[in-house]
Length: 485
Image (cartoon, rainbow, N blue to C red; front, side, top):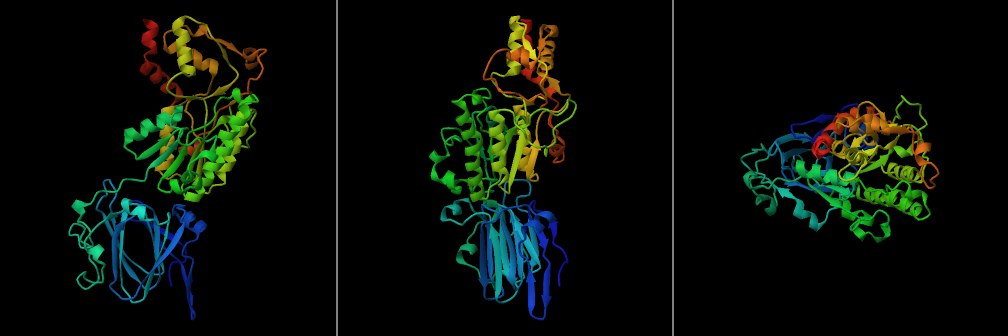
């Protein structure tokens, strides 16, 4: 009666997917699994998280509805009868105005992404049209709709029943032509932690690429105090219109987290608050990208080996323990990305700027030589994070650091001195024990922080060599010129 297996076919409209649905029939009638998440995802459909199921019953052949572009994804099919479906891309971009048409019966479904105009005309009496959507309808959502006239000459849809003989609503007859339609912008990305190193880099990249977004800081959404969030944030209602939530916020004062005062703060922001954010995203049906750290590992892996994404976590410090707990909370969310990184270098004061300043002032630093990893520049981290979101990469855990040869902190410092024209032998390598000496309250650090990048590369993103970006950063900061001066 239909295809033996679920099969997904692409179309001329990006993201608009036709689905061949197995239908099993006998003398009693037929049965189909209209939406079976595991099979659908395995066949190539996105795990789009529907929250509502609607049915439109149409009494007569020729009933025509649309063309409506809505601010959510929908998965359409028919329970009885047949339709002629028509879809027009009304999103901002190169495919604006592209048309796809297809006859749809019980053995066909269509995934219609946000911003693609959807219309259908019934080919049989008593047709029941059904669709799953990724958000609850509300009157306020109408402000985010886009509409196109069914009779628009530009797209020239060849309706089986001429529109003059079809049944249409007065509203559908009055929708604008294509040249008067405002293209629908992509759903925005929500960045939590706008003032941190990654948050600032993400906002800069989103603005540079013209990606719709909103960025919030602790004044609007403090991870450490979820009980004080506005109700729409706590319940997830305020998140439904977002394409994804990126959590770039964290308590990162590693040594402070070892103190009686800092321990509760670290756990509140890195674990309890993250769990609340994951719950809100689950309620909203919105994917969450959460940034974690190499500190979830104990660093005991022999040097020369890299931590794979599925390595068991074994954090040494309170900071690492709280971040591991946050990861666990995020993994309870079906649609998530956990992105571990290490040795992040952003704008402002950081290890690189500190070493450059010491080189310029003639100070010979003592630098730890038994902790090994790769630098991760915030702009590269931001690019990788945005790539995972925009490419709809498979959900799961990724490692995202700079590429290239792993080095110790002392070797990085020597490279900074060398690039600035200073004598690298001025950097004195010491062990972690020598560096910390008799100080108390110093958090233990992983000795091996080298993270395997294979899963990230499989998505099509190649991080930059961290030493190449080091040279670029020093040149951009003018550190070499300052030293020579």
